[in-house]
Image (tube, rainbow, N blue to C red; front, side, top):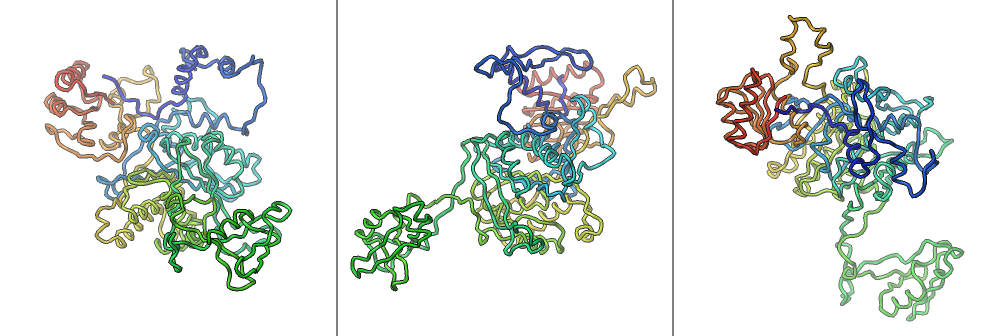
Length: 624
């Protein structure tokens, strides 16, 4: 009986297989550390395959490079021996919700999600550290082989959380930030749907590097735009010797060129017909241009009212928006609105029926009237949680706009720098506003709250706890505002925690084990792990979504987990009767998994396989 892998996929091995399919001649053999043969790539041959001329050696080329880039790529591809463990007591509506909150290192979480959510995420929004010199970045350990990384990653290291201060005095100030972002963006791209979009908040510190990094990871052809919003209503008065930085950016990329923004609906209430024009409702539009006389001399001329003879000269610095010939045609068509005083400016009648559709483009400039400012976002969090427990949260309206532009129905939204879970609140509010069933996945490290901080005083041990509490309180507020409609909304979330693998770590070779110790290693599952812990590792290994409904049943006296009406049935008891096996097979599930130690002998395992071949041959049967 085949055993489940029980660790995240080895992306390096998968990439080698993909290259082998395209260029089989570049695949050769090498030896691993134990001297066993393995597939490797002849990179000189691969470079030649991708070149239209003879390759003699390394050549300069246009690319983004920094110290540690190869190690960052290694970090993205290396597998980890970790899992996601369910935390029912911190969840809301665990059995029915389609939302996830993952507590742990986001690099680990992204690796664990690779198979279950490959190509399923419609919108990724992240607000990563801005690398200001005062924030923290992940200190990923790259100085090890795949085997060492795999062995070490299944254990809790002594340092705990992998966050370190990245001060400007660090000689690798920008390099460390790029090394942190590179593997995370590379893994995140895999999760995006073909028409999916990733939006990244950033400021001037790293916007240039992030743009180049995204061009490399996501492809420059998938660039959709850079949104700009004003984060403060007044200038920063703390340093008069510098320009006040009052704005931030949101970089937007698509998974492919199929990604689109919906645009804004035109406000038809602005179109009236006070003069009963037979062409229907219209609005008044400015005719003033943006070009000086030196730049566009053809747009600098006097507009003359043919009835009054009054002449209206252009603004010296702006001119008109349309040419003389176009304005003369508009005058003939009665589409110029003449001012009531000589000091006024002519304007154009713009008719509603002439618009191509009821949608116009989404601007790169985000209006503060629509988005708000940072201080408003801080106030919203304070009002919701009772104290100023989080610094610099983003306005909910910012992410609501992105949700409106990209998502609909039951689309999935991911934020793997969740912070105060503004994204989760935006998804819940968006669903309440338009009746959608959008789902979210939040990922947040359990970063300790600083001693003496407002968050610590309010009783929050770490940012993940704060983040989860915001979702709970926001959900209650949304339910209150929605009234009876809230019964149709998914206001819950299933909490999962990144942890070491459920399988035991055998750190000694078989010949080093005493006879009295052999019984300790008969069962490969750690003694503190529950059946539900094992179930979620199986869901990951089989690439099943982690929000599938789970029902716990007793089958012939044994505990069985029935997932999604038979998409999977799992029984992890340390022994399983033949009657229970036959009962499970009679339900003809798509997949079945048993605990390997549940069978006393190899003959018992073979009998199980025979039962399924006889009763339910289409069932995929595995063991852990």
